[in-house]
Length: 639
Ligand SMILES: Cc1ncc(C[n+]2csc(CCOP(=O)(O)OP(=O)(O)O)c2C)c(N)n1
Ligand SMILES: CC(=O)[C@@H](O)[C@H](O)COP(=O)(O)O
Ligand SMILES: [Mg+2]
Image 1: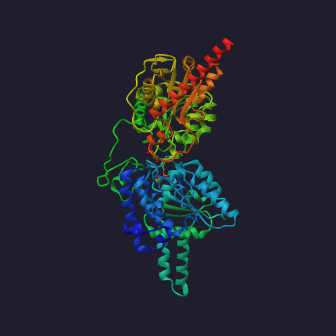
Image 2 (image 1 turned 90 degrees about the horizontal axis):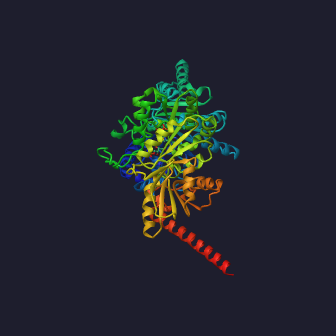
Image 3 (image 1 turned 180 degrees about the vertical axis):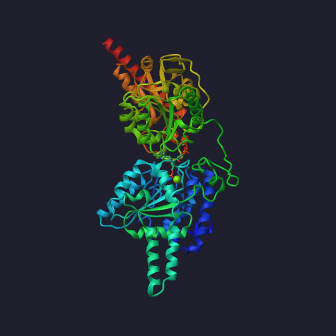
């Protein structure tokens, strides 16, 4: 890849003659496929925006003129063009290149969050600040047709369109898909625009008119008229953007660098808010991705670049267990409906959709709306199951609190990817849900430990009729089922220590680690009883009663410690005057850099060795304290 590797940055790219650009695009595609095959990552979205990104960096002077990528999963090409091509060897690996823009990596990355539909708000804010400072530089936001379905994008558009003197260039990268084809009114309107005679036609019209233009006479008038008409077609408010007063350039073939560049230059020179509508193909140029009907290789694991065959991790994913059980529940319960925020397949709803197509709603990337519309469905007699990744529930906290919980509506939220997810980095760790849910009155929260308890939790959740229920489980494959020795209320006793030494409360996916830690502690002569509360909210009376029987309670959870299970259990014990020390092990409230789940957990001391060591330390301290107390009592008695 001599051309790609010779580029030190966008200045070099801008110096390339246009005829070399297709070669560069081919080299970038090759680099994308070769590298993502080894590490996994967002291949389809990046293959689809190669030419678009080349054109952006030729027209705009990044980093002075910010280019904000919505979600950021499509920023690999931008990274390659801004001096990071060599770093792709370690994409998404610990200490290596992030899979999203990263402010620590490059001054070209203004924004790094990867929750969708934020780019227009960032761009709006940047443009407002530049305007106040008397700086007229343009700001660019690149947003996919999927991200454009998110409410925030429209809140921002409402502001951007109103400020005709602020130069915000919005590039809509319209590949017609989120993961699956994007659906809804916005998507339909984009599809209609896509069918219009495009920017290329108008450009051709202008060029031909210019060639024909004589010096004088009616022919000159006709030619000028044609030029005017062509330009009007190129830059005029149309369709859905019309009412907002936005200028619109397009549709543009997003894989034609020359045309893309021309459209962007025109948008740049306009000096106000303008939309450039680029039509692209997700996975472009790599047949296995381009032809994949499910998600055009939106996010892939490791694969063989020649055949496209995936090198799969073996094992049954948690998502599949949920997916199967939901279909069973749906067969028995005609009132159960499912909602996805544009993630039908990855959240495991595809099987339910196939079986009950009329009972599934894809609301777009709109978690807030998902929750409130679920409340509406519940009010009218349905039991909605909203399946989202844990980290995206953050978006819909207020809707869960006020629209669902306050109204005591029976809505079940299923959180996939709860806990540390790892390779996607800080924004994707599902480590906030237990903290934010702990403040929601009346919520029921289950953290199943295996397939059997996941299935059971789902059935229990859809039977709850007086408020929201939530089930959380991690990314990855299921562990073997861990049968309970005994059940007390919702609490499963998984291991009995011989004495009332230590009660280890193992939350969900932490169960295998806790059982192993208990064995290690036993080797050091410490008796540990291990329980799984299964339903961590509300804290059950049975768990409180059990805790009161022990000298020390240790909780282990795959979530933020603030407001987590340890905190809520402590509070519950205090509320009931049960005097037993609780030590909480979990994630500190930090943003963790990307790395594998195992690495992140090890960094924060969530390994069986570390948990066993902490138990031993705390246990010893308590022993010292009670020895001292006994000694003091004896001393006191002797004096
Ligand atoms: C708030 C939020 N919800 C869900 C997601 C998961 N997600 C990541 S990319 C994506 C689809 C994006 O589609 P689009 O914006 O069209 O980009 P494309 O991948 O097609 O280029 C979704 C749903 C997210 N990142 N943020
Ligand atoms: C960008 C985004 O939010 C998703 O594409 C996410 O990266 C997918 O994660 P999984 O690979 O865990 O499904
Ligand atoms: Mg898209």
